[in-house]
View 1 (cartoon, rainbow, N blue to C red):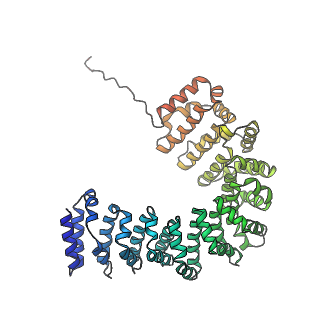
View 2: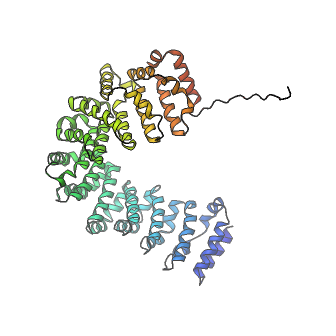
View 3: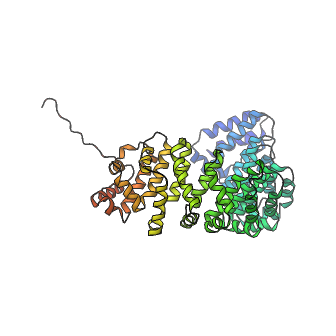
Length: 500
C-alpha cells in the first residue's frame, strides 16, 4: 500500500500537470481504509501536496485541501507542526482564506494537545498574531482561539509575550476592531491561569483594556465591559479588577446610567458585570451597591426585552447559591416585589420568554438537603407563595405543552421543589401528580425521560418523602429508579389457536 502511495507522490513532484497528479493521489488514497492509511502515513512525506498550494488555480487549491483534509484526521498532531512547519507558515500567509483556515485548523489540533511543541515555532506564533488582523473573520477568530491555547503554558507565554511582543504591538494599533481581537486573546489567557494574568498585567495589556472604559465611545465601553465581565468570572481575575479600582469605577458608572440615552446603553453590560461578581460575593455587592440592585429589579418590568431578560438572569445567578439567597432576603420588600413580578411574568410572557423565568426560579428555589434549615425552608416557601395562586397547577400545565424547552424548564423548577418537604407536599396534594410522575408514557423523547427520572430520583432518596407520600409510594419511586430512565414494560402476548 505504502509503495503505491509513494509512487503517486513521487510522480506528483515531477508532474507537469499537477491537477492530474493530485487527482491520481486522491483516487489512490480513497481506495484505502483509514486504518491502513494511518499505519503507513509516518513513512510517507506529503510536502509536495503542501507545495501545490502555491498556485492561483482554484481547482488545484480545492484538490490540495481535499487531500489534506483526508490525511489530517490520521496524522499525529505533533508530527504535523514538526514535519510541515515551513509549509504551515506559507499556508498561513496564503492569499486564499480557505487555505489559511485549513492551516489554522491543523495548528488548532496541535494546540489541543502538545502546546509546548507549537511554542517552539516562533515564526508560526508570530504569523498567528498577524492572522488576528485577517480580513476573514473566521480566520481571525480561529487565530485568537489558538493563541489563547498557546498562552496556557509557560513556554507558550514566553513565545507569545517575550519573543513576539513586537508583532503583537504592531497588530494592536491597526484599528479598533483588531485591537479588540487582541484584547479577547489577552482576556482568554488571563482567565486561563494566574500566570497568564500576571504576564498580561506586567506588559500593560490588561490595564490598557481597563483604560478603554474612560474613552468617550459607548461601543468601546460596551465591548470592554463584555471582556471584563468574563475576567470577573475567575477569582484571580476579580481580585485583579478590584485591586485596579475597576469595580469601584463601574459602580460609579451605575449611578449615571439615567443621565442620557447613550449612557443607558451601558446598563446590560454593567448588570452582567456586577451579576458575575454578585454570584461569588453576593453579600458585598448587594449591600454596598444599591444602584446595581435598583437597576436589576427595576428592569424586571422593562419594556426592553433584552434588559428584562438580563435582569431575570441576574436575579437567578445571584440566587443560585445559599449566600446569594441570604443576600437577596436582606433586600426585603425589593426582593419580595421582584418575586411577585416574576410570577406575573411567568403567566404573561410568550413561551420563549417563560424559559428564562423558569430557569431563574429553579435557581432561586433550589435548596439541597445539606443546606436545609428551618429558616431557609421558610424563606423559599415564602418566595414560592409570592409567585401567586395555583402556581403548581400552572407548572403542571406547562409539562404538557408541545414546546419542548418550556416543558423541560418546568421540569427543572419541579426538580428544585422536590428537594424540600413543603415542595413535596405541593406535589402530593396535586390531583393526579403521583400517577403522572410514574407514568413513563408521558415522555416520548430522551431528554424528557431523563428530566422526569431526575425528579423521581430526588424523591426516592429524600429523607422526608416517605412520610409525605407514604412508604408504599416511595417503594414505587425506588423501583422506578432501579429500572432506569428508559425502562419499558414488555407486554406478554398470548397467541390463541383459532382452531381451539
